[in-house]
Length: 505
Image 1 (cartoon, rainbow, N blue to C red):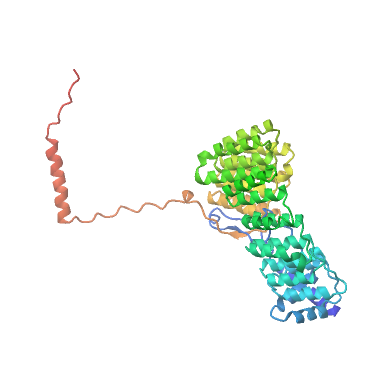
Image 2 (cartoon, rainbow, N blue to C red):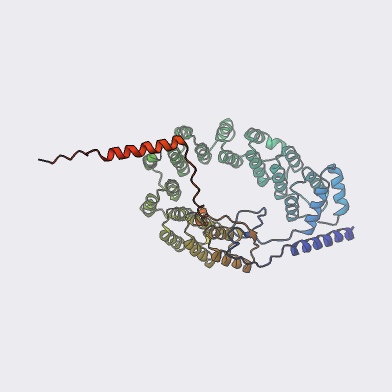
């Protein structure tokens, strides 16, 4: 059997080497005549958002072989799959990393993965943990196959912990099944061995409120009040959930019930109400935003709740969305009056707003201030890509190149998205020399670029020459008579004496 596995590994290595050799990139240069429509094209693979190409790591050959077996056996019975895995991989000791890689490589295997799970359970060298069970829950949750999820949970009773519970609740909520979440919480201790305590209730309430199901969370908390009495954190989560849905009156009602029940309204609730008020004002009447926000701030001071940096972030971000950059900057300079100091969110919001307002010098100054405040590590590739996108949108290409240089000086390596953005914008302005320089730089840095077409801005296209004067068409008799009548009328009116202007006495 080991020889069979070795043969598969060798075939995989040969295939991977041949495929990688076919991806070799030949350095290309573009003439100014062709680059207006032909330029690097990038291969976008499935990966997390980043302006840098992630370093490609070869998957484990064993995980790849198991994944191939699962994909080939997608139409067979799960029992035969587990027997086949026992036959071919009996010498393999499963690990959590091997399981995760195998599941990631088998997105289309479907319920065949249950056979993989049965093989793991029957293996003498492997015992499920909370993490490995959560891998299977996430896999079937992405496919919305919750019957398979129940089977996994039933087999892992006594092993499943907080990580698995969080995965189950998260997948149910994201699938739009809040009723099943409430039912699952009722029976999870009896059927699956999970603990029903205040921490698990907080987690369920938080997931429901974050995804817009605050009414379900409120009903569940009220029904369980005799068993698990809610605390201030749960009440704050309920108020925040109503604000996420835009239900301001519901949030105020919950805040009143919370106050009458002896709880103090915390800063998280006030910040959520403030954000909801600002969003509603932006949608209905932007001119009332400052006055309505001032009312919430006065209520905070009346109740003795001090402002924090999140309070200022809510106000500054909503002002920036209304393009009131000057008001946001004034609020930024007044943060010290309440003993608050800006964090990375404050700086990033203001930098983007300043660039959108074409105040590029102040935006650069804010970047320097952010670094001096100790948040320089937050200026990552994603943040710089956002700055470059804004600058390209307002056609400040020269300044975008300055920010691009600053990005490289800070140690952020540009990826295919960044080069694609800059080269596409230079090509749209018919600056082929700049685009070629970026293309050569990308090749030098090992960024995989291939030719791609870019559209030139119509303002920079050559206008077609005006056609020669068209020959006059022969006039018809009615047209000729009408022209003569107009001319005779002009001649008659030319002999009429015009009235003299009266002189002022």
